[in-house]
Image (cartoon, rainbow over all chains, first blue to last red; front, side):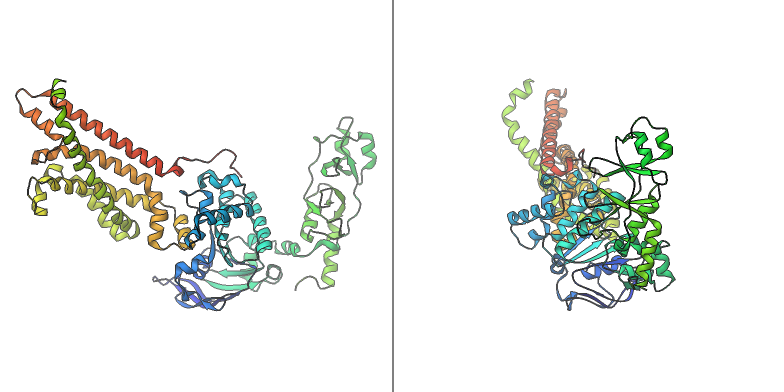
Length: 378
Length: 220
């Protein structure tokens, strides 16, 4: 456990970056420090590995004052990932990853062997080992940054806005990858971001800090969305928080109904007979959804339904067919329904095949049911 | 051409002396300017003093510096050490600024990461900052080496023998011995080119990472 005990950081010019922070970070989870610029989140993070020393108060790791060790010894036992990765441009990817083991006296060969394993762990091909950082994209560099932080197998990992400089799609990949890694490794991760969506997505617990370095709220993401303690947290958490809170409710109560589907290549006349409320979803050989056809579209089509001439579909709601359960949330279900051109959201199984449809009404009904049965945090 | 053929035997030692006079200051100057550059990249006060001072130093004419060296060092006026110390000063003057700039140009994310990995300041300097400064450092050393190669010849005017002897002797006869002068110039230029080339080669060997760019297909 990492504990902040009435920690204050005041700079010589009088600026208070962190103000009387009390925080207990549990082992084995991702704790996110989030807040606007100037809230002291990075300063707080850096007090854990003594990149910054507090003016008052104590930081403890497993009950031990971080000041009990020299800064360099302390830091070698704590992983650190920085924005833009901060890789050493003059070292190969492999040697970047091997940095800390080499510093702590592991032989170069053993350190490189371990580094090669880690590249695989973070999803980079072995061919990257001999490249230099300049030959990698931003997302790939950040994966190397994570591998480097993990190289000495530290129990604690500090991540300072690691994904904020990459484009949104890559950021999404990296976030998923981090969650996957964490499910395997179970590190104690302290993650700093200014992006509340990232905090909600990654955090087991989220600490919202306000300008001036004061802790506003420390809670689980769902509790944060359901019950912000004050207007600052409510506005920071965002205006769609009611909708986003649905992301924490499992969608198993949503009934999956039938949906009209036509295989691609079906004759237009046959397809017309299959429409429900003027719509049908077009599927490929494996029953995967390709898009929608409407009555209007069919009347302007040729002889058969083609894969090219379709109305694009909305997001998909995934259902695990084997267990009969679901891997989606109410948010996924509602979004599937709302983003579908026909108003019917497509439910797919783990293989991507269409298993049925859901409507917004059924999602709202499931939400009401969840509320009655006490599944919605209040 | 006749002059060259008649004097071939005497040229070897004089070339070696010339190189010795010009290159020892490059090595010493580099070693001296590293801690100075490190200090001025680290502390703004040191930078505010050292960088302008070194620029100023470079504006002193070489002949003047050669002449006052015995007064400063307490040496005899004909000793080669006078020329070597003066050239060391020029080398320092050239390199302090480049080393300062090179070290300051190391991205903050890189130095922060190095600190967070557990490097101590000295270890970080040799393992991370200095290697990254090598391209700029080598560029500065090349300029210093080539410039010293010419400046050494001026030391001939205060009686320190180098290839400058050929230029001085050649111009003091009547009529001037143009063969001798041209041979002197050509050898100095060739030496400068060879040293410069060797340094460039050394730089390439030391920095394979500096020649790579983003590869096609790395865009994910």
